[in-house]
Length: 491
Image (cartoon, rainbow, N blue to C red; front, top):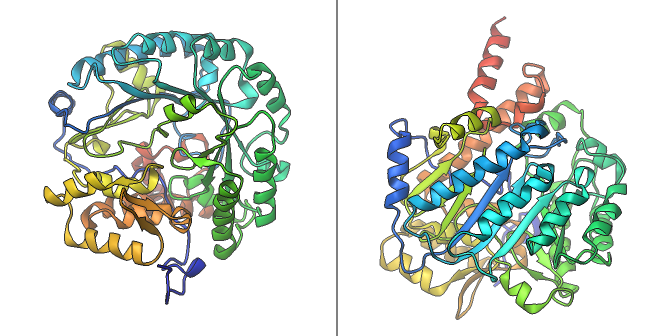
C-alpha cells in the first residue's frame, strides 16, 4: 500500500532525511557500571538458539581528517604504532573470545575497519593469521578489510591476498574534485588505478564507497558518480551512504558557518537516495549489507553467499554476538554493550597492562530483546517471521512498536511477506528514521540526545566558541568540548 495522504518527501510522513544512521545500540548512561561488572556480564551472556558470531577489529590510524567521518576525532597519525597495535588487538580479541560462551561457534564474518587499516602495512597479516586460527573460523567465513586509497601500499595488499580476504573496501565518496576538497580529501583520485592494479582481480569483491547529499552536490553529480562506478570494470560492489550530520559536529559547524557549500534541498536529497537504490536495482545488483550492493554477475555465487553484511554497526538481533576490539570498537551481545575508549594512547596503555579499556558511560548491561525489530532496516535479510513471532511471544515489544510496524507497512515503507518483513526502496531512503521509530520511546531518547549534542557542538564551531580541530568529532570527549564552550562564553 502506498503512503496515501502523506504530504512529506516522496509522499512519506517525513520532511527530511535522517540525521543519524549509526549508534542506535546506545542506551542511557548508567553511572553504576564498573569494568569488572561489565566483563562479568560478557561472561554471562547466554548462547541462545538463534545465536550467531561476528568479529570487528578497529584500526584508529588515518592520514586524513575527513569532515564527515565520525571516527576522525579519535583517529591518530601514529603510524609507527602499527606493530604494537596489531599485537594488542589480537590479545584483546583472544581474551574476549575466551570470556564468551559462544566461543567455538561458526564465525560468519570478520570486518577490519577504521581509520585506515592499510597503515598497518604487513602487520595486518598478524591479525589475519590470528583470526584464521580462532575456533569457528572456516572457509565460509567472510573477511572484509577497509583501506584508504592514498596510503595503501603493495605489502598490505599482498597480505590480504595471502590470507584469502573476501572483500577489499575503500572510500571514493565522490569523483568531483571540488566536493572532495570540501570534505578534506585529496582532490585527485590517481591512487584508485594504482590500488586496483595491486589487487589485480586477486580479491573476489572490490567495494567502493560513495556518499550522497554532500555539500554542493546535485542529483546529477551523485548519479554520474554512481554510474561511473557501476561501469568500472574492476569494481563489483558499491556502498552508498547518506551524509548525516548527527555524528559529525565538524560537518554541522561548516554548514552553519558557510565554510561549506549548502546541501541540496530536502526533496533533491531524497531523490538522490531513491535514484541511487533504483539505479542499482535496475542494473541487477543485490543488497548485501546496510548500504552495500553487489553485482551478482561479477561475483561467484559461493562468495556472494558468504557476504553477511557485517558493517560493524552492531548485533543483528538479541541473540547475536558482535565482538569488537581496538580503540573505539563496539561489541554487542545478549544483554551487553561494550564501547572501547577512543584515545589510542589510553587504549594501548591499558591493553599493555592486560586490561580492557572500556568507556563505561557508553557501555550497558541491559537486555535489548526487541533489537531484531529496530535493527532490521539496517539488515539486507530483513526481519524473519520467526524472530518477530519470538519477540511477540516473549513480551519484547510494546503496543506502540507493533502499531508502528503496521503503519510502516501501510505507508509502503516496509513490505510484509510470508517470510517476514523487509524494506521497500522507499523504506531504504528513510532507513534511519525507521530504525529510530521502531525503538521503544525511552530508548529513542539516547539517540535524540546524541544528535542534539552533535548539533550543540556544531553550533559552537559555527559561532567560533569551539575550534574545529582534529578531535572535535570524538564524542567520548564531548563533555570537554562543551566545557570549552562554557568557558569561552563566560570569558
